[in-house]
Length: 427
Figure: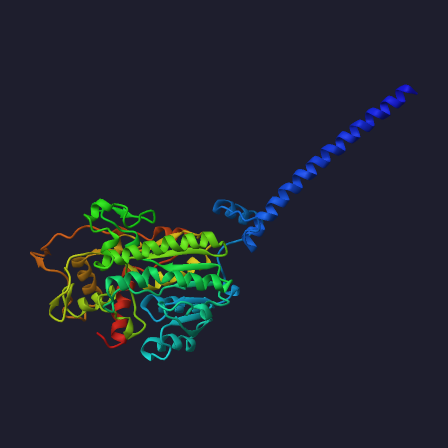
């Protein structure tokens, strides 16, 4: 009997120990679940603990619970600032082609020269639709209505200096006033992706000839190479410095704002020499790259306009199609591969899109044999009279790899540019 009682006690002890071990496992599991719930709640509803969830933890949890960043047309409209511009108009068109409802932001919806080509898109065989909203980059809160209910915002609006703005106005229009654009994004409560039209100017900096720039490069990286010009004091004096600083500062500002907010991600597109077919006469902006293509097709050497020499005639053209730039913006809102802080250079697909001015002249002669005289640069014995500095070299490899961007050939781009000038009776 004693032995039976001892065995019973031992068995009971083992059972109790087993139950205790099970309870410990359950408690550990509940603690893990509670931690995950708190972290997931921080992502979805904001930080309920008062402690910011770090970016790498957020991405890890998003993968764990199956949250895929990026949007689709079923998530809601996409707002596009600068919609009447050369790039902005193509962004609107591309979005509509994919079935999106677009909120096109313009300064003056009654200006027919700038908005008719947008409204005409509603008459084309496109799955999506466009609605005009008035918004001014220099008026706080003016984008609130346009952004309300939108799943993404593509901020293509900027002051780049084509309209004779001062360097300080360029800086303010490309950086200072962007803070209230982010305010409107926050107010919306619905925006998941904010895609910013930055510039290669935020990437390039003085480097040896032939250097290939990537998204890891930032303007200002090689301060010594600017020979004292890279200073904030020069913002009000130097348009190029003002523009580059503004674009780079805006990129860093929006990434930080998105990280701190946690409800949206910010991505940047960095175009280089954008050319390609124009949608309206208004897109022939003075001093733009497409403007200079027109001058070449009119027989003017590069840099010449109305018998005036406005800039040097030698340059390495690194060209990208405006339609590819537009598509990259849309893919930047959709792609799960893009994350907060992602940036994508939009430049030549490969070396075929990089040409010195004399090479560009030869290519235009090949594409437009009906034009008797096409401009270029000064030649001597069939070769360029002056040596051209071999820069900038760069390719849109990351956009093709991560965003799945497919691109037009340089021949299609140049031909489309010239043909569009003919279609709007400027050539």
